[in-house]
Image (cartoon, rainbow, N blue to C red; front, side, top):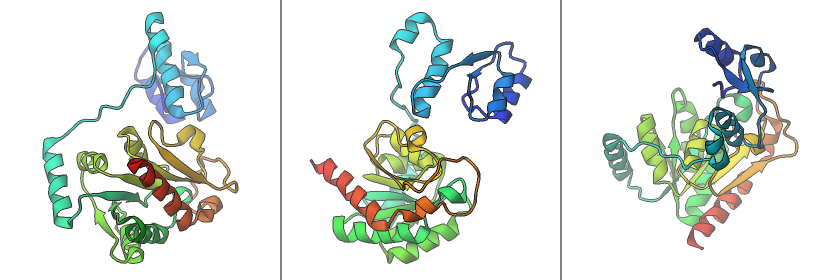
Length: 253
């Protein structure tokens, strides 16, 4: 079953030797459908709902009637939980927001300095410190956020298990269309999502309280452009702060 809908993933499925290969009738990359033996019509707007439709095609008729998106049950790694707790103690943090300045490609990336401005204002207006999730080769981004935050944001890096532990304890997540954003949504953490070339109706935070910011200037495209999306640049720090404060206010309501 190919959930990715890409030529490469469909080709891997065919090369696996499996006699039956399920995929979407209209996959993300059209040529991928040539490798499927069973084609399924996607249902729903969001990719989670579409993938569920594909999984449903494999299920029995009894299962089909009751299938719905399950709650994510992510693992708890005790060692990672302890390491995460220790790092938070060293930073002197108990409540925090997570900032995720990285992105898969440049067009999806909101300027790092603006994350720092948001952190500064959250500290001033909500008394909430921020942690910067630092992925591989993102140290320069983190330094730019820290400099603009003027002490209101600190870097945090670790394993995937530690990121899960860190995200579980966050009051808020702020970032673009990335894996860490979807992790936060799966864990039920409120999300402020900044979207540009990808469509939040399909790829937005799913199953959690969220505010999605997207400029009308943005055009849906999966081209891996490294230049900033004009629509992403149209989203201001104040837009993000207002959305964050609304979500924080709802937590106390």
